[in-house]
Image 1 (cartoon, chains in turn orange, purple):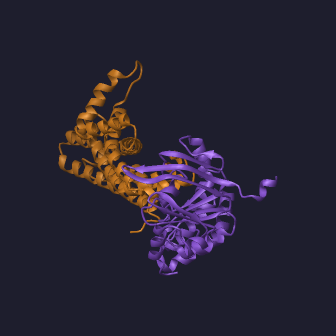
Image 2 (cartoon, each protein chain N blue to C red; image 1 turned 135 degrees about the vertical axis):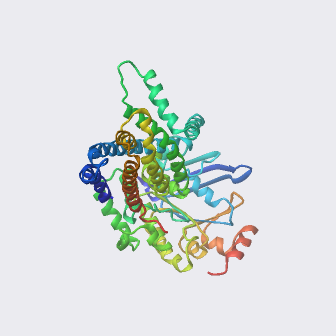
Image 3 (cartoon, rainbow over the protein chains, first blue to last red; image 1 turned 90 degrees about the vertical axis):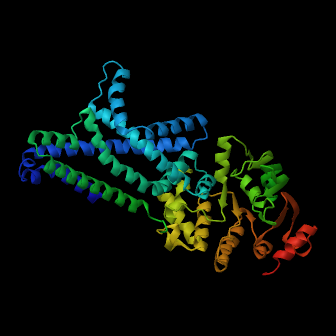
Length: 241
Length: 252
């Protein structure tokens, strides 16, 4: 896991060096590609982490005995899953600044991160809910019988066991997120796809540019899936297969 | 001071009733259990004996009646409930060890979280308990790597780690392969002689006869007989108890 994380960093910071050796139109734009990839990875990491947190909270909310909370979480998932991501990004970008208090400025990047977090959070909600439902009732009974509080029972027993079940699906959502973050180009966030668009517009050579972009995306998703696979292996202890 | 000679009542159950929908699981059950007493609870399937046991630490909430454990009334008061669960340990039919934790962590989790013990103290105590149930060498393994009998012995050690005054056993050997029943019964037999209060729902009539001080026979949600093992096995008072005994009599 550690190795995958370091690999990801090396790829990110070192990418401009081999790319600059490639002939035009790629070589001269190597720094731009590297910058774009960094923005894409930041968007993915920030929205991915926030999305897991939202997923756990909303997943719990959907299983809550409080009807109002359940309805709220149901409504959230219904709304996000039922509308296009591009629309959500545009909506956050155009609508959020109008309701923000005076003096608070949201960057384009922040708007994209908020929209992506809300989006992946909705999909994560269902994965987390399925994971929690998969924990046998006897595990909770044993924890309660030992005197653990409901919060301790959740944090020490239910959450780690539910993550074992939910992680493959969460990893899937993260891999999608790497690519979904490309939609942030619509609100002029200079991420990888936006870089590609600009470079091909200047050079009039779309094919080599977009192939380069595709390869970088492939490297990034591979790094992310290696990371989640390693995490899965770590959580998998004590599980019969 | 003089009263120390008489055993102190530790669980007092008065007219407890419980319904599951239209099913009447417990019908005004009353019983008192004294410190150090080992009670075997027997009866046909669906007679309410497991439900009764599970009301004693509120894994099932009773509908009416009163349960007092060590002077504390078992009700919706969360502080009472927490205090009672610290004093009452439970061993389940299907072990319910925490599958994502090692054997050692299974035993230390509650003392660290609930009793606020230091990790070192909890681990030292856990190792002593694992040694007592003969599983010290398995401490670093995960539950899935152990046999059923070993898992149930760990579950007993886990319950004991909280230093409970009362231990509830809910059919502790029913899910075990026959050759593993004895290793669990041996641990329970040793516990019974240690002076801890035990309530054991069981189908092991040999164990009930040999180890228990008292037998409760449940039938259709009520206690039909409350007597000594010798009396129950040689001279049951009710026809239902006689029928039950003739059905389980083979094998001991």
